[in-house]
Structures are given as C-alpha cells and as structure tokens.
Length: 354
Image 1 (cartoon, rainbow, N blue to C red):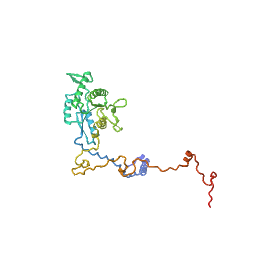
Image 2: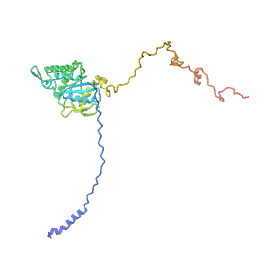
Image 3: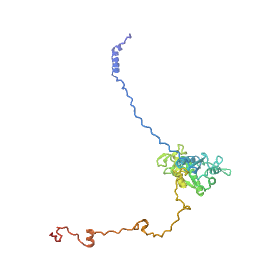
Image 4: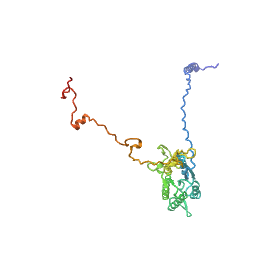
C-alpha cells in the first residue's frame, strides 16, 4: 500500500472527488444518425447527332494553310456536318508558311493538291509563321522591308495561281491578333499584303480581326462566340485558338461559302436514285388508233352556256327595290314620318267601324 504524503492527505481526496464529479457530469457523446440524402440526378448529355452521309457528288471545300487553317477546317466540318452536299477536305501543314520554302514549298505542293481534290471552293489561311527573314537573291531581308514585301507578294501570287488562279472561288481568311504586340503589328501588315493580292486575283479576303480584339483593338482571350455568348477564344499562350474560336473563324467563311454553293449547302437534301425518285405522271401520247378530233363550232368566250350557267361570272345581280328608311325620307324627300295613332300630332280622323 502506497503511503500518502501530508499534502496528499490534506488535498488528495478533494482532487479525486473533483475528477470523479467531472467524469460523472461529462455527457456521453451524442450518437449521430446517418442521414441518407437524396442524390441529385446526373445531367444526361444529349445524344450525339447522327452522322450524315455525304453524297457522291458533294461539293468539295479545300482548306490549306498552317495551324490556324487546320483549326478552321475543323470549324467548317462542324458547320457543314449536317449538309450532305458539302464535304470539307483539309490539307494543312502546321509549321509551314510562305517564307521557309525550304521546309514546305506551298506553290509547288498546292498545285498537286488542287489537281487531286478538284475543289469547288478553296479556303486559305496562312502567314502566322512568316515573321522571319526572307532569303532574296542570296540576302536575308528583314521582316517588312521593301525587298521582303515584294518577295512575299510574289510568293502569294504564285500560291494563288497554283490553286486555280482565280478560276475557282478563293476565300483567303485573314490572321487574328496575338498576345504579343509586335506579333500583332506584323499580322496587320501581312493581312494588308495578302488582301491586295487576293482581290487582284478575283478572290475574297475574309477579315476576322474585329472578332478577336476588344473595342480598343487590343488582344482578348475571351469574347463572343457565334451565338453571342462569352466564351474562351484563345489558348493560354495567346497564339492558339480554342474550339469555340475555331468555330468562330469558320463562321466568317461559312457565310461566303453558303452564298457560293447555294442549295448545295442546304441540310436535308439527298441524292435521287431508282429508290426515291419521285413519280411523275405525264398525259398519254396519242397513238395510231386515237379517236379523230371532231370539228366543233366556235364558241364565244362570253357565252355563259360554257359552264351550263345563264349568267356571266362577275355579273352583279339585279337588286330588289329598296325601301327608304324614315331618315332617308326626311333628309332626301323632306317627309316626316307618320305620327302614331293617338298622339297629339296625329291629325288623321279615326276610322269609325260600322
């Protein structure tokens, strides 16, 4: 048995009693009951639209260019996904341009692509990678110098000639603004150079600049999509374009394409074959045994007997005699209406019954 000290003898029992009271008074933790909350139903994604089979004679839209053109081709494919009479064919090279012809020579490559595809419309978007020196007569000319501009114009014309030379409808989509101010300045210059050459060749330059800048002309990440909703248009690097941005670029070209293709770009058209060709009824041709045409007497066009009637169409029927109202008698003839029997102004003698 442990011996207690003098202090324990004086205060020990009191402390132990406090501990016992504290343990006794401490309430037991309440037992929480598990509540099963109803789970909110998961949003069901709408079913994908059925894939529309393209017609064998569908109009071909050829899209050529760099990485921006690749995204534009995706946007155009989405725009005409439900149009059986239109098919989008993409022939792009993401890192290409008109400056580095040693890497990819667009005028040479485009000629073979054009002959292979035989497009109805050509869409071009090129130039984002062309902010670099250009080799002219063995000299490297700086960007936007007079020699650089002259050579770039020549290469632009060569590409246009390789893509039909203006005989096939040409839509050249301009370049958007970029995050870098210096890059944006160069894009403005390139758009000006290309626009001049495209319009001289009879093509159409599609300006998309205002769709990717704010009211002050500055680069924006977020802007309106084709439905007017605020969405992200550009990637975080300030160069690439999001899916909504690609669809927006395609929307600018879509309007001109639908105008050029007309009914071929409509949705719901189908090819006519022996299975769905409409039945056409034609009057039978007269044969050898056809009854001889009998000679008839001339009939006047005004004869009402043509339809078995007795009156010409449009003839107004004779109106029955009209009975004038008391007002008409007063206004026209000046005759007062007869006073009722027994009224003070009725001066007629009453009839006496025999």
